[in-house]
Image 1 (spheres, one colour):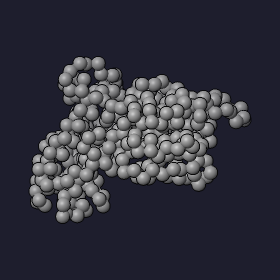
Image 2: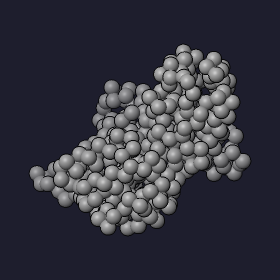
Image 3: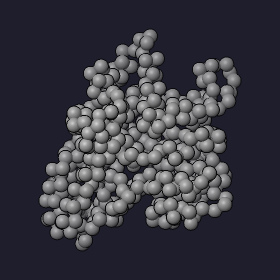
Image 4: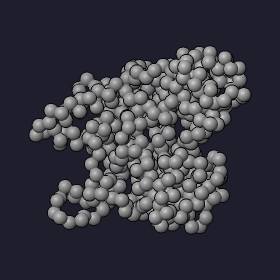
Length: 387
């Protein structure tokens, strides 16, 4: 990464101002990093990376292309840098963090690393159901499927049994945008392991991540780091109880010691590592995380909340029905227009330059901090044709 790019994204915000704790200058510098289409409202599916991330990928790829005696060690250093940024954002240390290429791998590691009865909501995104189902098929766990439409502390408490050892939840529901009360869930779960899929929240919402025993998140959505990036953070409880059966050579102690022996599993979060990740992706991930730090999660969250609120007003004014959470919610706004098929409305939005997720039962908008409020008028124009 060039010094110019590094200077734009390095550091943690300390300015005291009225907008999420970040100065106007920091916010402006952060927003200048993004070039997505003005009507792009699909960050819950994919977050277009920043200029700094794109430049870093290009610079590190060029370095790999011109490899010399320092190249590999230089590239590999980015993993430590990314882990350090993860640790800072989670309020922990690097020994409790490990980089992973996606959310699914982290959840598979958790599913095959626990035992006993696991409580999982059947309505979770498939990345948080298949790992537990496969672990059950392999005889590792017994899955207790919770059928509650919303994973509230009350619903979890009612579904727990004395045999339950682990509870897996999403920080933000991918359909409804419901934002889980992690503190209350921690109290309900007690000494059981609490696994949290954080991909729809991390970097976009402030949350008490420290209450999770296993926190997993990919970087391709709200973190805007691109595909092939992600992490897991483990609590001390998780480090003690997980049996990392899928641990690879980089998840062992002294992985660089090639002595023809199988080494014991690491006593840190590295136990979940299978092999070295792409150092180019690690560099991109580090830059994306540092960019979030440069403005602060609170400032990002505040702007997202503003946009969601403004779009909700527009939708209601056009006769749409909001079907997502309106109380505890993240950056997801789901709606329908009575009498209008969702696929037809989704196609009309796309034709007018608005990118949304169209599903059988709703359309989903998910803006980011960089979303221009002018999109609300374009949204209004499209919806009024169907009103």
